[in-house]
Amino acid sequence: MATKTRSSQVENIRLRQDDRVSPKASAVAQVSLRRDKVRHSLSHLLAAAVLKKFSKAKLGIGPIIEDGFYYDFLLPRTLAPDDLKEFEKTMREFISQKLPFKGEKITPAQAKKLFKDQPFKLELIKEYTNPPPGVKKRPLTIYITGKVPRKSAPSSPRYRSGEAGPRQSAFVDLCAGDHVKNTKEINPDAFKLDKIAGAYWRGSEKNPQLQRIYGLAFQTKKELDNYLKLLEEARKRDHRTLGKQLKLFIFSEEVGPGLPLYTPRGNQIRELILDYITKLKTDHGYSFVWTPHLAKETLYKKSGHLGKYEAMLPAIQTEDERLIVKPMNCPHHFEIYLSEPRSYRDLPFRIAENATDYRNEKSGELNGLFRVRSLTQDDTHHAVRHNQIMSEIDMIFGITKEVYKTFGFKKFRVRVSTRGDKNKEKYFGNDKLWKTAESALLKAVKRWGVPYFVGVGEAAFYGPKIDILVEDVLGREWQLTTVQLDYFQPENFDMTYINEKGKKARPAILHVAILGSFDRFFGVIIEHFAGAFPLWLSPTQAEIINVGSAQRKYAKEVYEKLAGVGVRAKLSDENLTVSKRIRDAEIMKIPYILVVGEKEQKNGTVNVRHYRHGQEGEVKIDKFVEKINREREDKTI
Image 1 (tube, rainbow, N blue to C red):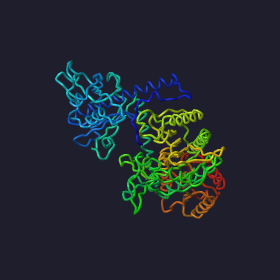
Image 2 (tube, rainbow, N blue to C red):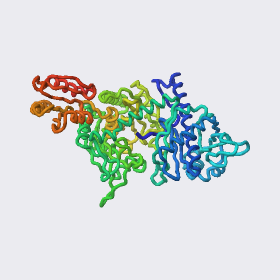
Image 3 (spheres, one colour):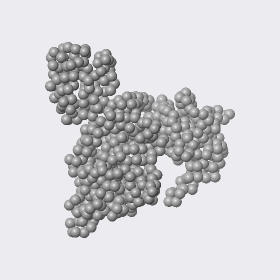
Image 4 (spheres, rainbow, N blue to C red):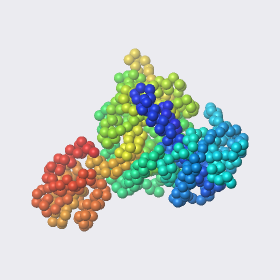
């Protein structure tokens, strides 16, 4: 899963329905702040440890992340796992020395001199002191780890070990904080260097590739040990591994990275999920449409995406025009709305499409089904009167809860993504419209009564949005459902309707995806269920295994009876041993294994083995058919 760098957003946390932070929430925030200080401090100790081994290492950045920290380096050789063990040992030595952390403001001239051998730091210094128009200039600060002789400043941004011994060592980094005051505040048993990965400087393939060292860090050893167990369980559930094992999807070098190919088994699940969401939306008054995968470049100029949406693929030049491979569906859907006059009686106007879009994601950010270049969205657009916004969002929340219940997601919370005051030039519209839209979404979430928080600067460029984050069985959060409120595209497309007074009025638009990216959703449920899908989703729901050749005819009768009522059944390969057939069925996580021997043939029964509950014993065929039909209809998990 891709992890975003976290910033301190304590002031934005809202754990209650009103805007006050409870004492409990405040205490949680303080613990989080202390943990973040420890993690940031550990990233500095990591850099110091790396510089002790590689004195000419070039330093990138070292932020905190969701479960710890990382630091990027340009090094003379490729790192190996044993290097991480050595760095950990050095970091623990630093911790035991009770080294202080101290911040100092410096001038640009001092910074350039101090980091003269560090090209990446020099680039940051230039960016901070000469920001682009509209961006506030940032002060330059350094953090010194260790003791420095009085009346002298560190001579270079690296670990130094002087004649006075290790306690006179110092590491200096360009950093604004926050850190612990002293390494004695860090539990040496509660962190671990986790892995090494490649990362382009500033995320651009045009820049040098660095080596990124990830670290895990918590308050206690118990927390770390529990998290390591969670990682091991997550490794077993990795959708890329299970996707191959269960023959669900593949990636082909000839087709290209980020372009998944769904096999017959995987596509069966895909179609079942899309059929489910299609019926659910149809029952709630949505009309389904189909739109082409291309559009003229002028359509995306009109929508404002061209030049603002970085993931658009380059235009295709035809004989007489330039075409865009669509990265989203809204402009196409707006054209359907505009195809005929609309009255207030037509609103809410809801159209939906399970549409495949294409995005120019960076190769380093591709990650199985979680981040792809071709993605299918269960996309919907609602054109609504402004007084219908609340009721429409209430309906969307109702559908969302039903979907989450069906797939076994019991816990979720909401992020209200707003514009904020920075980088306003990235967004459409004026302050008044943004305030109105953001207030409407906050009101809708409060009406729902679920935990929520505000994500400042996370809005879409044309409007604020609600992102719903669900928690899987391992406690990991995944962003799925998105509800975006848009007052601006109706202006761009001159979308109107005739109101009760016979005058033209402007609708608002809700952009909604319940599953979000189907591909990402599929990856999430593979890991959520560990590949053991509920019966209604399983490509093969039952496998019939005859013990001896004398029972083959009876096994075929059982198969035909199940298939006749729509059960996706399979007759096993009798050339293999019974134990091998059972093992293969378990590896493929087939829900029901039905063993038939002489006894079962005589009694008209099957011996049932369930992939979750184990041995269930001998059951009459008709009773089993009733049981499996009930589970399919109820979508039992």
